[in-house]
Length: 193
Image (tube, rainbow, N blue to C red):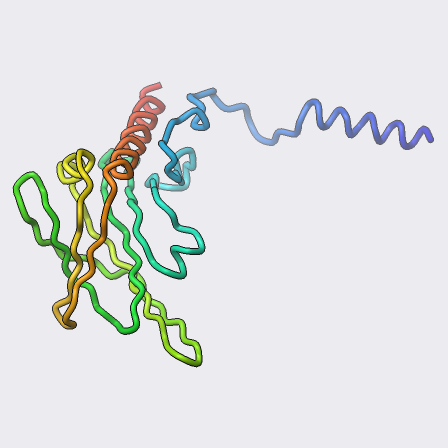
């Protein structure tokens, strides 16, 4: 019985005091208090990452199966330069080879190349589903326009006839911009301390 008491006391001490390895760190702003408007943020407090990745939107099972889109951005810790992207997964019954996107900016209609970043094929006994992941690089002024009104981005291919329109909600755009701004402000404050 005394053995159990000693074990219980030791366990309680560990739980109350906690275990800590290494030297004490200088306290800084708690990134858990950062309001990123529902975005996923990776690399913020990680000294081994040179960039912080910010993503918004649904990337769960339905995204994997049916396709969809989300915003993705990076904040470079060294240069302090943000980059903005629209990430789209297309699902179709053939390879479309999407290579162009058209959308409205403050200067009117813009046509931009898209970058193919992934492909996959899933086949059943009846047919095959072709998945193509592309990114569209965006600038801040375009996103600022899109946050005031819902917008459409039309993707097309120079090798296959057809196009696909992606509808973007202004609220999602606003949340993405706010999350990017929050990460940039957080990182700027933590560096200046």
